[in-house]
Image 1 (cartoon, helix red, strand yellow):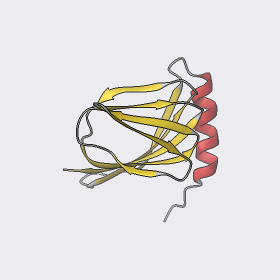
Image 2: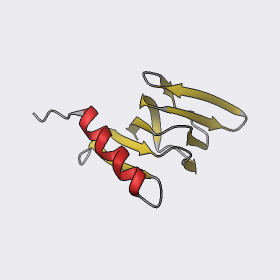
Image 3: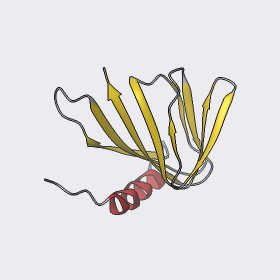
Image 4: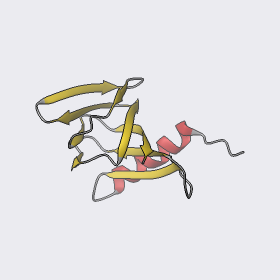
Length: 109
């Protein structure tokens, strides 16, 4: 069994996001062939947005660091470190107000 050091991974990916032209960095923490779960660590530099997209399945977003806004249609919710939200099934985007790290968990079909 492999133990992942989330705080260390978060620090590495925040640094990578800060140096990247896109202002973001991500790594898949868990996934395998045939798995119905995928978990991804996402780091966003302050002011960056993950553009509008559709989720490939039921999903949740856990804010590990920072302050982000999840928008879906007219609805929006602000997440800070420690906040967890179910991702709405409709198209949505995520905007980082500050440098932020998120854990996205998706149940694949």
